[in-house]
Image 1 (spheres, rainbow, N blue to C red):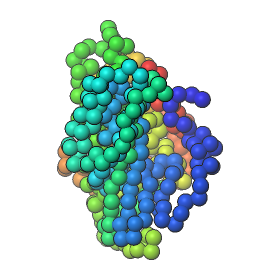
Image 2: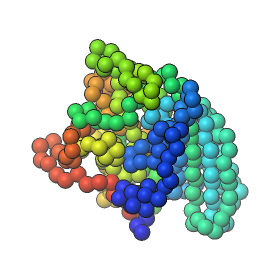
Image 3: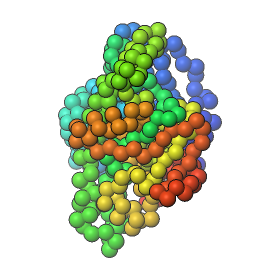
Amino acid sequence: MDIGKLTNEELREIVFSNLPKLSDRTMIGANIGSDCAWIDLGEQILVSSSDPITAGGKQSGTLAVHVSCNDISASGIRPIGILIVLLAPAGTEKHDIESIVCQASVAAETLGVDIVGGHTEVTESVRSFVVTSTAFGIIPKSEPFVPGKARPGDRLLMTKTAAIEGTWIIAMNHSDKLNGLVSDPVIQEARSLIHKISVVEEGALLGKFLAPENESGAAREENTLIRRKTAVTLMHDATEGGILGAAYEMAEYSGIGLHVYPDRIPLHPATLEMCSALKIDPLRLISSGSLLISTPYDTYVRNLLISEGIPCEIIGEFTESDFSLIDSSGNISKYDPPSKDHVYKL
């Protein structure tokens, strides 16, 4: 099989089809485009998510914390704890492991998240560092909730810029490939993008931002409880597959289609220059740091985020069934399902 995350079809064929039936306590389980599992605890709901860092090298500690916590926040919930499993290749020095642990600790302290356990091992089974993290959060059933499905007519918004994580990974682990192609100041600017990798603040903010009462229908029955809906219908952290891959997953998870306007997707200058030099599509490059948002209240939500200092743009619209990419001249092209992330081209 090809290197990288399994395709959606591979997931359905060899993973999901072989999983056991879920119990009644599992409200949301494994699915395409679903960031988290939701477990019914009675008066509360446990929300959890796992992610591996396989391309972060010796910088994996920072990414491991942020990527999993981003998934929790994409459910509109602030994470509270995390488990970390660190697999190090044979020949690893003590200071390399210590460095990754310290990175994770700083990131966790920044987010206010406890590292509550995990596992650390040196093994010949890996050739580079693999760090897997599982984050979790808890939400009382009495609190507002993100409905969890995009609807035709909802607008697709994104925060910040595309390929934040991918740009940082290239600058940290593949700078040798940029020699003579990109200046050192650009590479240093790309390395500073690690400070934009978290979407915890915007996710937690939107998780409590209610839909306008005069338009939303005020309340909705969900799992036999009346709960208040937020102004957003679905959120997704853009990881492997980039902005285009993550947006496609949102529509597929919701059982609908999507039009995306690639020319409206913002790119950091360092991302644009580095991806151009390496002939990589930044819209298909791993993009943790950007939160994708489905909402019928696009101006309402965008203005809130901008007022909080979080850049936000409208980049698409959900449809009944068709998928298309539409450029600034109105030309329509095929919108393919998620493919292997372009970081693996390196």
